[in-house]
Image 1 (cartoon, one colour):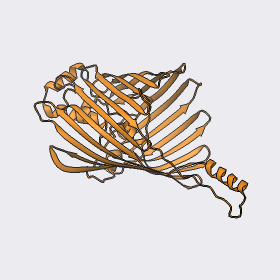
Image 2 (tube, rainbow, N blue to C red; image 1 turned 180 degrees about the vertical axis):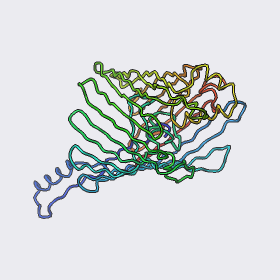
Image 3 (cartoon, rainbow, N blue to C red; image 1 turned 90 degrees about the vertical axis):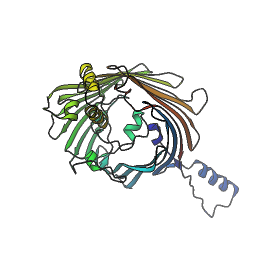
Image 4 (tube, rainbow, N blue to C red; image 1 turned 30 degrees about the horizontal axis):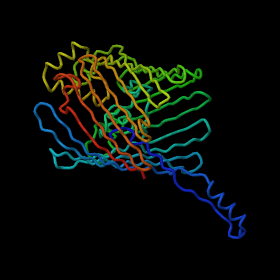
Length: 420
């Protein structure tokens, strides 16, 4: 799939009509035919796709290139059980194999499984595993508080793929809706201690290894301003405040700010231990999205992580013991957090580029601390039930930099997706 887009499949099926057996005149027959042709279509409760990917990766440090293969099945169900009651299910299974390691390995991700009860037009209660996503930025989401350790299988570095193809958290969620606003309350309890590497584990240890809660208040202030205020808490840690704000300028430009702040330890303390130094730390992603009449969308985003190492600390870590460097990077990756203070993110997409049904997209992230960079590009062509994509990504930078430390240098991948 290598683009989060592999998961947006919508199938329309079923045209039905009934005709009376007694209608035997030509006029009645025509009327019956007209009714059959105009009968409404209904979206299927099930959404299913399969995906095959073939890639080739060139490595650094004199290591040989290798080929990779992946077969994925992604299924989703949104079923009405009774008036006001819904069952939501989403699951993804990935089979992976690499030429340097002929053994296959499987990873199943139970993304969602919950029951939703809308007992009044403005009151909803959900219970189960829910992939709840907060944030208005594109590349870095400080207010996406439930993202930590939720990705079991990385099929694409596209940020939308990382947000969609991950484990939900077991929680109780209530929502109150009103004209122009809403209030969401979430309680996510601790259920077990440690994550699991078992291929078919539901892995509650990754998402529910501590007690967490969240309140989110949204209120549209005008046709152009729409803020959301968040308050997040986690056992043993100070509460975090959050703000998601968008502002429309004209018909083509959207400005956004996503901020999270509160007392907390640094990423270095979380990764390597030592006495935690809880100070007020800010995380911010802010930028602009511009859309042209030619279906081209460009997003420029500035990113800041006040809990990450600054320039001197990052340089010192790269010159220190390798295990400490790897442990720090692993903690940042699991949290989907920036390992250094500042980064710049550029994302672009072009629908129906050059020819109809051809979409081009890509992003580049520049680490402003060590000037390393990650680039990802995709060309995707759509048919009625099939997508074919060609993807390319490259890690660039000096040794021990954010992206230069990656063992892989360049990856090409072909992805074919079939939507049932």
